[in-house]
Structures are given as structure tokens and as C-alpha cells.
Length: 138
Image 1 (cartoon, rainbow, N blue to C red):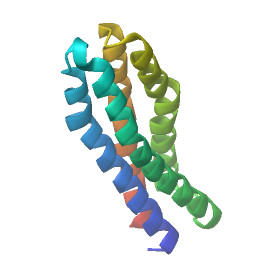
Image 2: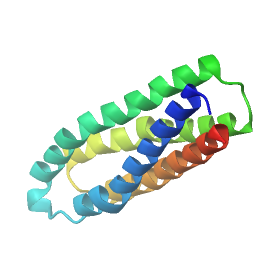
Image 3: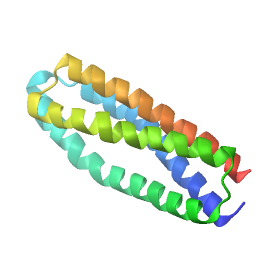
């Protein structure tokens, strides 16, 4: 296994684990928040998770730069790329804008449903990326 493959595997594993924790812990707690506490809880969630998102996504993007510069393109790399694009694209196109609206408008049921749907897609993409990275590493 090359250093770039190891970096990609580590970054996709960290991303998948982070996504799983958001799915299993952070979002259920957020959704269960009562409306009168929503603004404070959502603001605290945003403040706490932003540096983690920056670190995880930064490591993921850095590992991709290294992988694309040094690894041969094969099925595993393509699968990992599709998963990563799905996860990051869903974050940018759906989850982040929905969080912004939730911050402005509060816990509207349709926004919470949209956030949870985006999260499922994002986590599936992260797991797919990890599977592809495992194939690259083997």
C-alpha cells in the first residue's frame, strides 16, 4: 500500500466515522430539541461542529489531492471518488443550506426532514468512499 492510498483510506475512514456519529448521535439530539430551546441548541451545534467539519473535510480533500497526483486510476479510486463527491455535494447543496434555514426559521418539520434525508445520502456517500478506498489500499 502506498502512502497516498493510506492517507486516502485514513481520511475516508475518518469521514465515514464522523458521518455515522452525526447520523446516530448529533442529528437525533438536534431533532429532539424542543422549539423553545431550538435557537440556542442549533447555534451551539453549529459552533461545535464547524471546526470538526473543517478538519475532516480538509483532510479528505488533501488526501484526494495526493491520491489523484500519484495513484493510478482504477475501479476502487473511481468508487471512492463517486462516494466523496456524493457526500460533499450533498453537504454543499442540501445539508448546509438547510442548516442555514433552520437557523433562521427554526425547527420546521419539512426542514428537519430535508436535513435527515440529506444526512442519509451524505453518510451513504461517505461509506461508499470508504469502500472504494479500501479497494485502493488492497
